[in-house]
Length: 254
Image (tube, rainbow, N blue to C red; front, side):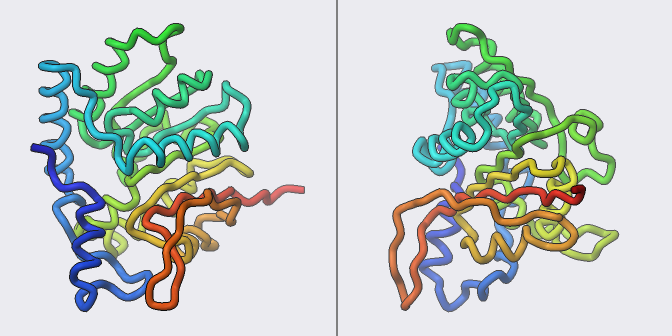
């Protein structure tokens, strides 16, 4: 059976409103924030793929992935632009971009089983021409960043649920003394060239909370655009169950 999804964490918060964190406060730690959990999830999915060809779950559903692909097509039409999927899982977001003609695609994940699954799907695809996707294991928050990440000129960083999962970790960085989710915005922003983008989809954070976390002097990011989604009203506030927002690295040179 699949493990609990990020949506499960959101459902828990809704059912325990009196225990939910204040706006922008750290999330309650969950096993969804542990590497062990994701290793177990992708080990099962690798097994299922080998047995019956099941490619695994598309986090947040096909619509969320499609919205991100459509955003990339609108704002980065150059199909040879370097795109990096942070926490790629089964690689489905990159496979969708490949179907639209994008040719310089990279997916990273800290789970070896995730990369094994994504590479197995890539090897078995009948898509022609074969997708040009590079998958490899890498920890986004490693104190020694992989040079394959830091030396490339990324046009778009893609995050579909990865920031959510990291924010559910109770791991504290020994040097900074804060939970590792607080280090994520600065870490990934550091890989972006001027005027490049971070496109993030979250079910745990609102637009205001994401802007607070990512638009800081340390990241050098500014708001670029919000992907429209169906909204609902509750308690006098309006929001949506999933937020997809794009940030852009500020231009510092004239």
